[in-house]
Image (tube, rainbow, N blue to C red; front, side):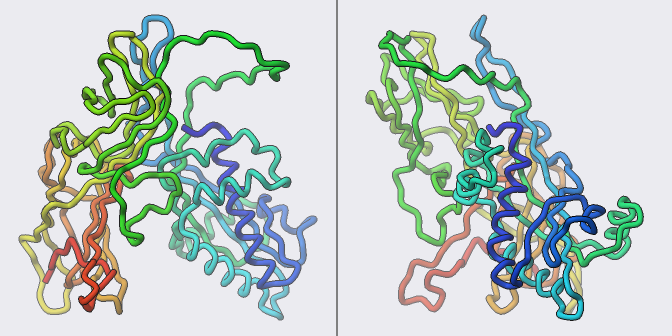
Length: 422
C-alpha cells in the first residue's frame, strides 16, 4: 500500500512527463504547479500550469480494507485504506499572437492521450530525478492498481466556477483531467529508524517471506498488462509464489477471505492452481495473498494481487428502439467468478468496427443479488451495433479474446466477447 507521498508523486510524475514534451514543441516553455492566481507573478513567458483543484473518494474503494495481524493476540484487524480520484486543471499561457497557448494545449493533449496510465516505470524515473528529492520515501510505484489518466469534459459554466475561486485572476486556456485511482494506507506510518552503524549476526524467528508472485502461463503481447511486474491473473491461472522459508508440514495460502492448503510446496516456491479452487470462493478485484503455517502460528508478509474476471456469456434482451434511434436493453453478463453485491461493477462496450472506435459504459444494474455469477445491466441510449464487451469489477477488467489464427483476416485483433444490440 502507498504512503502519504502518493498524491505529490502523481503530480510530480505528470509535471516531469509534460515538461519533456512541451519543451520540444514550444521553445522555453516550462510546466509549473502553482495556484492559477500566482501565474502573473514570476511565471515564465510561455508554459503550462498543472494545478490539483479537487480530490474525491473513489466510490469503488470506499469499502476496501487491508487485513493486518495484531501484534498482541495475533488476531486480524482491519486497517483502513483510501482510494482517491485526483482532478487537475491544466492552463496554457504565452504569446497569443504566435498562438503559443494553443500550441501548448495541443502538446498537452497529445502527451496525455499517448500516456493514459501512470506506470511504475514513470514513477521510478521521477523519484530518481534530482529535482524531486523530497519524494524519495514515496512507494507509489509499488501500487498494484493501475493509475489511469482520463480527460474531463467541462462546459463553460463548470470551468467558470473553477476560475471564479481565484479572485481577479485572468482566464487562461484550460483543460481538466482525472487521475484514478490513487490508494493511500491511512494507518499508522512506521517511524523511520536511526541509520545502521554495523551489521551483527543474529538468529531470527522462523517466518515465511514472499518475494514475488508469477504465473506459469504466457500471455499474448496484446493481452499483457501495462504495469511491469504485475502478473496477469485469471481464475484459471497457476500462481508461482516465490520467496524464502515457504515450506512447512502444513502450508496454507490465504487469498482474501479464502484459505486453501497448498499441495506443491518447496522451500522457495509454492505452486497454486487457482482452477482447483471452487469458483464460488474466488472474488475479482484486488486481493491480499499471504502464506500461513498454522502449526507454527506464523505467517508471511502480505502481497497484493489483481484477479481479473472473465466473461463466460453475454446476451442482450428487451431491446427497445427502431432504425437509427439509440437502444435501451438489458445486457446480462455471466462471469467465471462470484461477484458480491457490494462490489463496484461496470460494463464497457466498444464498437467492433475498427473504423469507428465508439464506446459505451454502464454501471446501472437490475435485480442484483449477493454472491452471483450473473449481472444484468440496464443499458440506455446506446447506439445500435455489435460491441466488444468488458466487465470491470472493483477496478479489475476482464480480457478481450485475440484472434490467433494467422490465416484469419482479423489476425491479432480483438474478436470477443461480443454482444449485438440491434
